[in-house]
Length: 325
Image 1 (cartoon, rainbow, N blue to C red):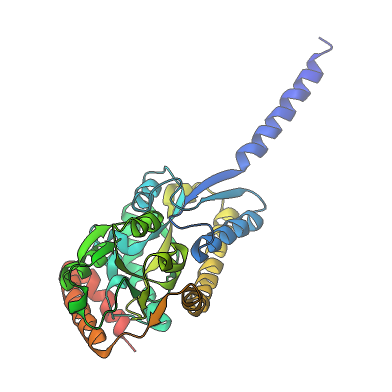
Image 2 (image 1 turned 135 degrees about the vertical axis):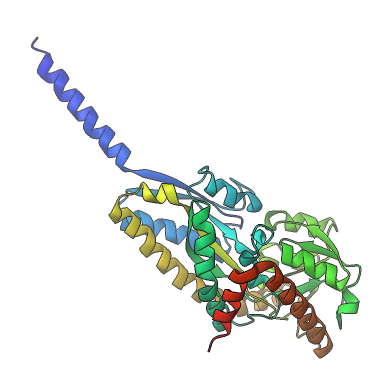
């Protein structure tokens, strides 16, 4: 009987430890891009900020370079609760709903200022779509403006006919169709190998992707068309978010807002850096000819008309809000 007080004390201590352990929550954050990419670095800072702001109650582990889920699997993983939070390229899901592809329409929004306007116009529609699937949009960050990588000089769209074109979204596949190229579906983590083995010999993307994938080792021309600025979105499983206490929810929201501000700033700052770095690696950074620009704007006009038909009232609302002064 004399051991009972000691045993009771042990049980109470154990219960206290269990309570401490259960108070700490761990989230997985799958991402598609390498650890050194500015989006991934921003995610790492976001996770550190959440840890600090929540006083260690929420730990977020970033899984870079599609190591946990492939790029096109991340949204479904978050929706199904296999991951609590994830980063996705919004244009990848245009076939699911056209509203996801608003920022993949060539020459609709070609500057950071216009991209921000489009993001604001797009957000209510994205919030509605994600809420219907049990998710929420925390923040978005754009890629730098998109240009054309090619193995040869391009003076017009006619020169793009027959190119083996990397398609990573419905929009980039549609561009291939309109210019007479051959679309090949290649995600970011597979791009270096696809270029090295000749599976693709052209694509449209930012200086960031070209640098990360060492495209300069395979292709020598990049045309700075500044055609569009697609956004990555960080999405959260709503049930996982609702399970957090209010102070921890506030920590996530604050860290997300800071990550959005920081990400937009870094994206714009690194745009010129990436172009300079590519040039130093031997890539020719070329202004597009007037003919190539005119041809690509025709492609953009066709794609906008197609998109507006698919997007319906939601799409019309996005474009109307975007075009307001």
